[in-house]
Image 1 (cartoon, rainbow, N blue to C red):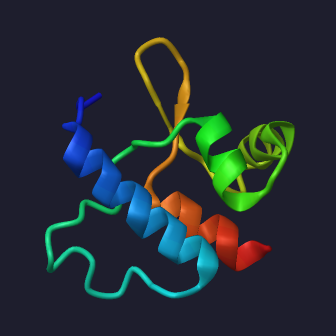
Image 2: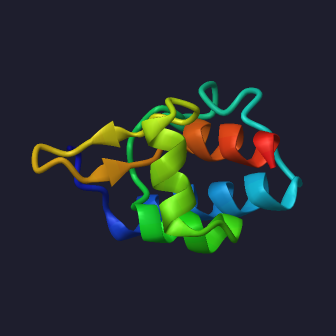
Length: 90
């Protein structure tokens, strides 16, 4: 897992919020430097962003609907692409 600087994480957070609000898409995000598949967000963070219960996110993973990457310790980490998929399914 890559550890991000505070400013970089804040930029990804702003992008995730824009995705959830529907004011942004991932179109062209790669071209401006966002790594949309980089695992950044925890289950609790995504749950708060998307107003989804954490157990629902875990169930989506078990059902293979949205499959976040895992840390070495097994914790789920969601990418911008995962958040975008989740928003599109809601």
